[in-house]
Image 1 (cartoon, one colour):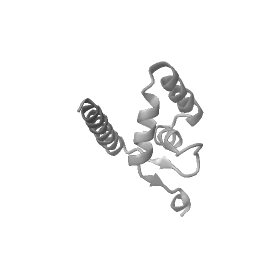
Image 2: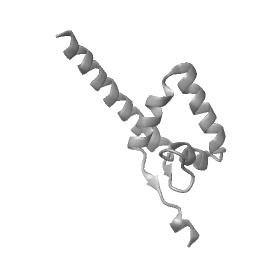
Image 3: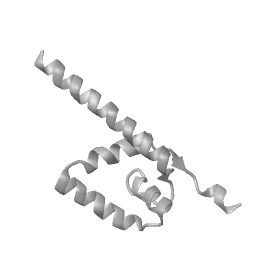
Image 4: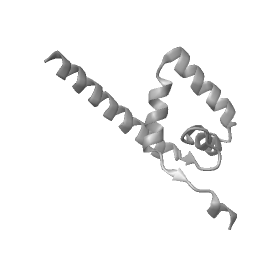
Length: 92
């Protein structure tokens, strides 16, 4: 019975995390980059959106994983919910 509650808590927590990431992505106009990507393009897309070097964002993301532990969950959530922006239309 206790395993059911732990599983239920984890599933609800993940759904809330995905919902919050989706809202943040929509409000801020975030997207995943197709040109500047290492894993899923999240840091590249955020860097392009705000004019920040994706390398700096990747270092901050790595530090957030090592120090706080939450960075991995947020990265995966953004990788799932953010749309991919293609840059080939910008040339026209």
